[in-house]
View 1 (cartoon, rainbow, N blue to C red):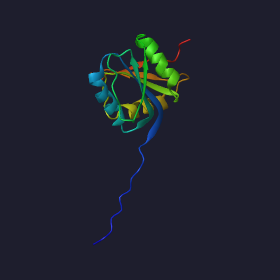
View 2 (cartoon, one colour):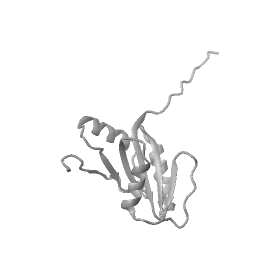
View 3 (cartoon, rainbow, N blue to C red):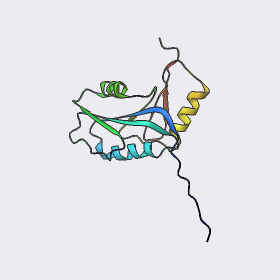
View 4 (cartoon, rainbow, N blue to C red):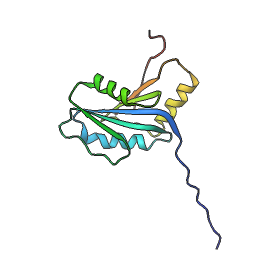
Length: 138
């Protein structure tokens, strides 16, 4: 009987913080987080900011959760940006689900067309990517 070696490798990580905002969409939040954790290229961190949720969701320790009084999506995203440790950001809402290659494609697109400001992307439940222009803003 021959000996077989199984090599376990660490996932490829990108210098990206994923910021998920949640306002009373807890029933979808787990699916959103799982879609981020299933990426072919993983983010350095997943940050969930509960914006005054009535029943904040518990988590399994794979992401960071912050709670605040209800301030609206813009201030909730601002809080996520303040907490984020990475130069690139991906914003999701709690009811968003991204395809498993989404982050890989985002990083690849950013590498092909470097810009001076942080690229910001968002993705809806329909899987449509929306890139917000960051060059030429001033």
